[in-house]
Amino acid sequence: MKCPVCKNIFLEKTSLLDELYAYSCKSCGGNWMRYEDYWKWHESNPNPANKPLDIKTHLPVNDIIQAKICPD
Image 1: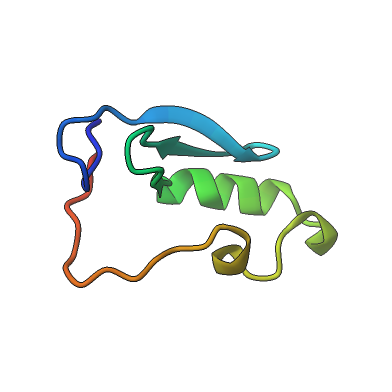
Image 2 (image 1 turned 180 degrees about the vertical axis):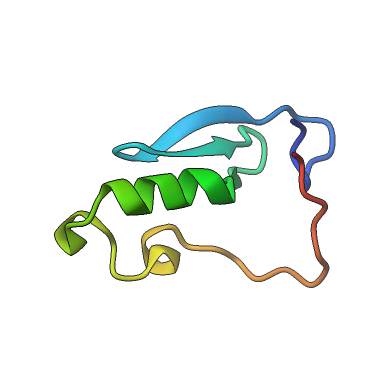
């Protein structure tokens, strides 16, 4: 998959938290996460202490003006 921001950089699979995976771009530092990966992690960790209260504050996201094309 190529980064939807950089357009020509391939995303690499990485681990954000225990058993929570994303694809990251080494050029812009962006992370892209599959919906299925998030829910698999969410359902396998029933203890709220293991989860950030708000994933947006744990993994900050800058607002963008235009929609990005899904790389998958």
